[in-house]
Amino acid sequence: MKDALLIFLIALAAYSLTAGGHLYSPDEELLYRMTESLATDGDLAIEPIAAGFATRRGGDGRQYAQYGVGQPILAIPFYAAGRVMAGWRDDATWRRIYGISEDIAPEAPDDPRLLNFSPYDARNIAPRFACSFYNIFVAAALAALLFLILFELTGHRGAALLATALYAFGSMAWPHSRPFFSETTAALFGALACYALLRCERGPLIPWAAAAGFSIGFIALVHLKAVVLWPGLGVLVLTRLHATAFRVGKVWPARAAFLIPPFLCLVTLLGLNLLHFGGPFETGYSDQPEGVAFDTPLLAGLHGFLFTPGKGLFFFSPALALGLLGWPAMARRLKLETLAVALLVAIPVLVMSKWRNWPGGWCWGPRHIFYMHVFLAIPAAFWLAEHWTAARRIAASAALVIGVGVQLLGCSQDFILYHRVFFLGMRPDTLQISPQINFARVPYDAYDGAMFEQRFQLRAIPPEGGEPVPVRPQYAPAPISSSIYYPPHTVWARYPVMWSELDLIDNLWVRVMRD
Image 1 (cartoon, rainbow, N blue to C red):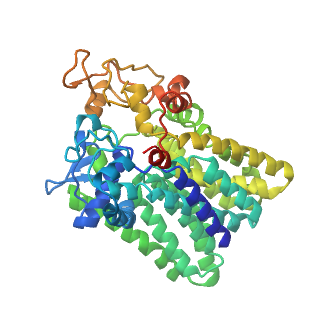
Image 2: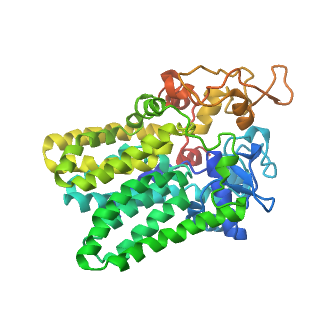
């Protein structure tokens, strides 16, 4: 446990040093508004952002977000801390810390220059600042929990420590500690369920069964798409929890302890859908232009997740590629557990490859399969533990060094600003959009032009000056997909340009030092 605490503190320090200190995307803004609504009003009704992104009108006429209630509940202490912190500095200072231009009025959250871009709302800066640190703590806790899982499975302290470092510092876990996305929280509860199920054999059975059941149920309240982890966890339920319950003669107590928490979580989920949208299976997702659709060709999605420079798994998490070597070693020791981990890795990739918006936007790496990354570290630990030789330790250390370099690049920039500058032609200093938007054809994209125009409502400053006017894309695919398939448009080419030519570094400490 001391090792896990040390990992948590080291990861917390590293992640804090690269914090952005602000929210980035519309998804985060809506999660923040849900947190604020719960903390101040005790409900989930929120003020929608421009263009009605990811919200749906409920039966009471108010707007509700499509996202789960799990993360907003957990983030309430961060929001409360932000309310306290607000009194430590005046509004102007908070705006500078947060990175908001002085000429954007706090009372004008729908300023056209903020349309669909961070920070969305120039009010209540301190609570937003505090919530931007939420995932730093969650990601550090996830790294510590991964060590406990690896040590439980391998019994090898050195292999568990090194494989944990591969995940915590050599994968996209580091850059994804910066945004307020819910995938990191979903990954934490998936890993917690995994650890609780593994511990059922060594007891006490009933508390660990209850912890596993709660974690599995809470995943659905955090991030509905993360229920793709359930089949893999189900294998562990049968092999670790149920088998142990039969052996010790506590079948029904263990079943009750395991089943009651997820039942309550599902009742909560379905009840909120019924309360807000009039039906237990009605969600905000179905009301969006994107809809609920799995119409991407499977091979197109798999190609995107595995081989494209803009969203390829091992481009963004190179250190986890060592896990590919560890499956035989793991299978030789733990066959059924290997099946469980394989399902935890493979099913999210297969399912999300079919999802219409499989890329997940302009953020760093393949966000929609982030919650399976932590499980890729498990076979890497078995590869190291099988032969704890100098050659394997050197190989893992080299992979870690490469991974750290990749993640430091990912932590250096605002991915929304990257999209503004290189795909909308927006000048960082004036936030004006060029009337000449460069859209590029790509091998595959599910969107059509009308949907894209409706969703993003692009505006441009006319060459002769004046008010921004609507801009209609000439055809659909860009800008998301052109940043996926074509290396010159990707973060690998453009992040260094932002750093070297535009003098843009999105780290809080840099912003404070410059101020």
